[in-house]
Every structure is written in C-alpha cells, then in structure tokens.
Length: 231
Image (cartoon, rainbow, N blue to C red; front, side, top):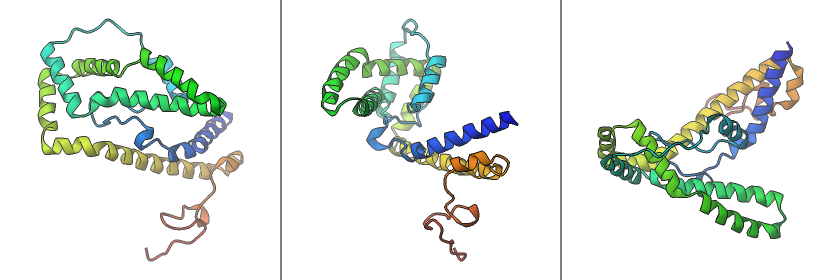
C-alpha cells in the first residue's frame, strides 16, 4: 500500500511540475535547431535533472581518434551540409549560452550579468567549439553508415522531396512530440483522478478540472462551460 502511494505521489508531482514546463517547451530560437529526422543526430538537450542523471550514466571518456577513409569523410560532411546537420555545433553552443544566461540572470545582480557572461563565453568558446561537435558527428555517421549508405542519402536529400524534408521535418517532429505529450499527460491525469478516491492525498496536487463532471471542456470551450452537443 505504501509503495503504491509513493509511486502515485511521485507521478503527480512530476505531472504538476511538468505541466508548466511542457507548456514552455523551448521552440524557435530557444532550442538548438537540430534536424531531428536525421539518422545519428542527437536529441535536444534533456531537462536539467534528466541531463544530470544521463550524464552520470552514459558519458564516456573520449577515445582515440578514429581514422576515416577520406572519401567517406568527404561524403559525410557533404551530407551534413545539405541536411544542415553541420550547424548543430553552433546551435547547441548558442542554446547552452542562453541557458547559462537565464540562470545567471536569476542568480546574480543585474549589473553583474553582462561581465559574467562575457567571461563565461570567452572561456566556453575556448573550451568547446562547433567544429568539435561536427567532428564527433562525422565519427558517429561513419560507424553507423557505409559509404554506399551515405551516397544514397545524399542522392535523396538533393532531390526536391529531400530538400522539403530538411525544411519541414523539424516542425513536424516537434508538433508530433507535443501532440503525443499532451495526449499522454491528459491520460495520466485522468488515471490519477480515478485513483484519488483511494488516495485522497493526491487530490490537492492535481490540476483543476476544466469541464463539467470532471471532464475536459474540449478545445475552444471556456472552463466550466458545457460543450455544444451538436458539435
């Protein structure tokens, strides 16, 4: 019984805490613009707590440099250029600097933020470089795909459809992810509402019910208003 209650409370806390976070999912210039449809491309940086956990379990010390076939490396870099993956290093670096500035803005006095960021950016840029990220991705591609694979991908991405995929797929992926998160979040909250009679402690932690009879009012329906039965 206590184990079930602990799990339920943990889920509620995560949902309530994540409700605002999911509503503020970084978009546009806030998030690193990585073509998420590309094979071998890293996902967006995880939230702070998740990133700390992942870093402690997945990061490995850098190994010796891998000697690549020059023709294959050239093909990989061309593929990364036409799919805009080569911009990932710059995008990630800008994203991290923005996150640090946001934290510094909350932690430091306003008059100190500018000097702090100037010092951080100088040292950060000297330590990390976009070219280093690009080199790392080249190695990932080389391990994952053969030269024939790379040439086939280049052939596709140089077609009109391939170019359209490069331009539109990041938005499609983002919208799909948001739709999935919203559906699963609502389903989890509905399940927890059903469990609240057995665990009354969680009622106060759940978000307010929008519609009558404990059901969401639906898109375009003001909270508390009854949906039109004809729609």
